[in-house]
Image: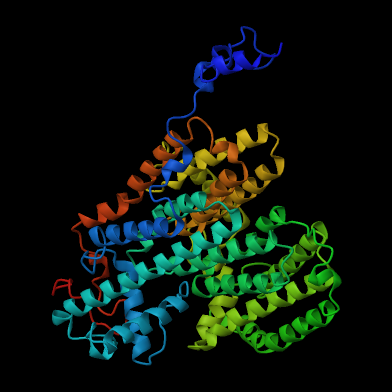
Length: 568
């Protein structure tokens, strides 16, 4: 019944109690659902977005970097030079050789880019008066060499910090571009910066930081390319991703497995072009540009092919036995065929135009060739052999495969089964605990994926499943080397990307009534565990006396280390 004007005026400003009253909770809920409680109707006191203390993108990144720097100087920079011996020693020694123009002597990873960067970093610091000893020829006698070692190792730690900050910022920028949610990107960047592997890599001089960082950046570049079919520059992005990944391989051959998994990761993330008037579909220049890309690939592949040929032909002079089928060069051809086949499959599934597919494959060839040609910056034949034969190099000293000549199928199967058991035990955290906080993030990813599956997000779950499967598979392989802390840098980013993709693509997770509490708990546990190893090493006092051997194999030109007793 309509109100009169007078009734309307009299009722103005008086609340309608019936309209404002809370809807009654039905006594009989719909079949298959639980009763709705008042807690369900109440808005959460703390929201997901409140996990971000600084409510803007630049300020949040600055805060993360500041946290990394403060942690580094509290627990890391001031450690004695011998605290994390091993590769700190080998890399400093190789940088000194580099600055004296002497040949590289350490080829295990082979650490090519690490040595180049560290050697030039020492030169820079020496040139501006911040480092006295930058070359082996300037190193004093062992009894007087402790200040030189201390200064060099700390300089190397500073370089690791700078590389870590660059990696973290690049990761954050590319991930934000991928997911489009800056708050989720901030949280993911925070988690990466304080993950167990990266937290330690910022304090030591190891090859995993550069290699793992480069392959992760490559993955994010390729994911962005897969999700942007409308851009005419996608082929260039794909080539850039291949170049960056190849540089990672040049520094540490262990990433060969992760590189081979990249095509598998990319397939479910593809997207079809919606623009019928796009460059590769309508432009008359599409075919000429594609042909030009193929020509460039052919020309740059010629000098790179000579490196590949040399590395495979000279492999018998370094390795006593091929990795497979009694012949060197077999699996290298298989890897090339796998990458080509995966790219063709991607083009078919997501209906990529032939001209663009050819341009992208040409760009990949250019990127790989340029990455391999970087070996000519400081040419050493053994670097070429190691990079071109990564599995032979790994099989020479990996756990369970101590020598190439002793490899058997049963030995590989036994190592694989043990690796699966190790990965399972570490994921429980109870059976095998470690300073790896992303384990708890994995629990979240699994639980969130189940929620997404129940909500019908099948493709999202498939995408996350591929990322997690690759992470677990890589950990299984790296468990052949006891799944050491440094390998976390190679696989933790996959878990972090999976978690960020879930949160950004399935926003219902962000408005869950427990989102803030779960997020705060994960961040707190993550930060505490990430500092466990740095704090532990800060209060250690032991010396690596096992290195007290005259002219140690990895530092042949040095008589002994300053901390060694005279009688050693």
